[in-house]
Amino acid sequence: MSRFEGKRILITGGTSGIGLAGAMRVAGEGGEVALTGTNPERLEKTRRLIPSAVIIRNDAADAASGDMLAREIGNKLPGLDGLWLNAGFADIAPDEEIDAAFFDRMMNVNVRGPVLQLARLAGLLNEKASVVVTSSTAAYEGAAMASVYSATKGAVVSLVRCWASALAARRIRVNALVPGPMDTHFRDFMPADLRKQFESDVLSRLPLGRIGAADEAAAVALFLLSDDASFVTGSEYVVDGGLTKR
Image (cartoon, rainbow, N blue to C red):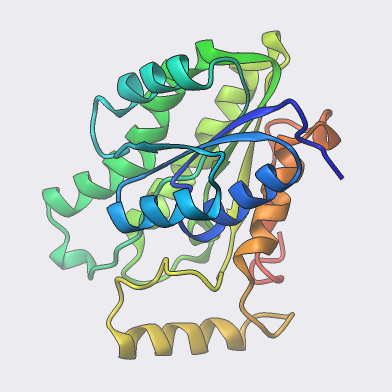
């Protein structure tokens, strides 16, 4: 199957986890793919895994990231058929310990980053292009100590609905990917004992009885990026093994 033959796709946060899994699938299905990341080792590893990919060092936390990314893409991969705004990170803290720096750091990456990136990249999207934005089931779970992260991912869902309306005139579709617990490095920020407790608790509530694989979430993102989802926009696609049953 070559759904992406002749297509150009940009994935932010594409050097690990579901972003990398999706990039490998796009390349395997004949597409040209560009990826962003910040970790030098992961950037280099991705170059080896996908030699044909355009690799760009870009930090969504930087207020100028959208301008820089638009310049790079305009020069190296103009005319995008797909944009997956996937860069993000999580952190937790008791509410009484949250300070301005903690709040700003997560909002800057998870909310301001995609807002400014889309603002600068929208002009590079072809007619009938597809945009996917990664949210999280954290927006619905109400987990203790995850209030700021959950708020950022709830904001993403609202942004997607607005962007779907705004870009519909150009027949550009915009949808949210909403992954639940995935077997990636996304929870590495947690102390080992807390992570084990968290994953045990989540596992006990999963109807499918297991944590998801990065490739399983990526498969849904690629459906949304492809022409197979040509009549899908403004939607949330939940990939969580039944955790939230949405």
